[in-house]
Length: 109
Image 1 (cartoon, rainbow, N blue to C red):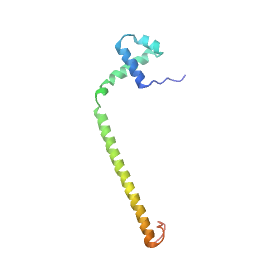
Image 2: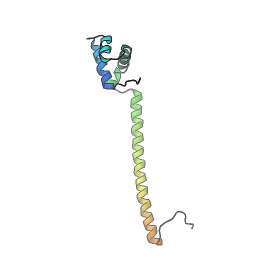
Image 3: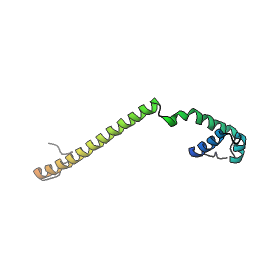
Image 4: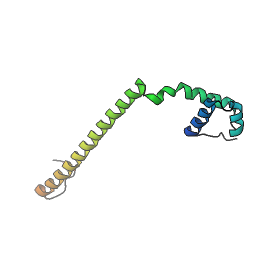
């Protein structure tokens, strides 16, 4: 039997319902056709990660800074490749104008 996957928004909705305590976990599980043990696990995970709603951890901040730095470097390198490509094409045209034929890297001097 294939395991059913639940989207995070659905899990959060169910956990918030559990936290309201208007129905028992068993009642909610029966209604939603989800094992109460699974619901308790979602509740535990939800509570353990609640602080993330109010701010990023040091690890997440550091990771974000590293990603931003790598994106800046990638953009700089992409720009440099573009400049060098344009320069290379310009030099090939000038070579052809001066020598009368296309530049071939396999030609010996």
